[in-house]
Amino acid sequence: MAIRVEEYVLKGNEFIRHVARELNDAENTDHASRVIVSVLHTLRDILSPGESLHLISQLPLYIKAAYVDGWKPGIAQMQPGSMADLLDQLRSQDEHIAERYLISDDTAKQEVQAVIRVLKKYLSEGEARNIIARLPSLN
Image 1: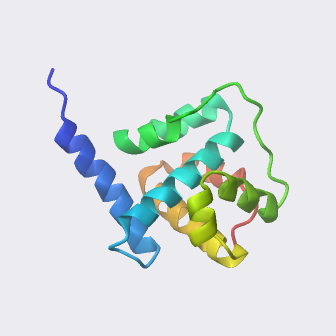
Image 2: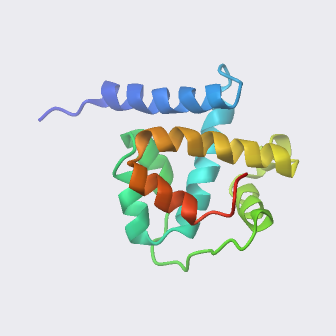
């Protein structure tokens, strides 16, 4: 069986471009990539290993790789009690993005919402509902 690297790259880039469009910055895929990684790493800090596996089973391979990069399953999950807790965790994932893009809570919240909107297109309805239920209200 041949490895379909080009297909994996294409699908990963499609996901990134989709997030970039949701961020209203279609050309800035570097920004979108950093936001994706920060949101995914925040999610994995919240979800159990089993929940994480359900989530990543539905994502493109390169996005799965971003999710698991540096992951230490078994570390206690974070339980964000508030939106402020969630945004603090998000900012702690990448200092560069925190300093450049996630300065205000409103902006950071919009960035999370953009990634969640794209994730919902890739996840089953039940999986998306389970993920969103673990987050403080994004409204």
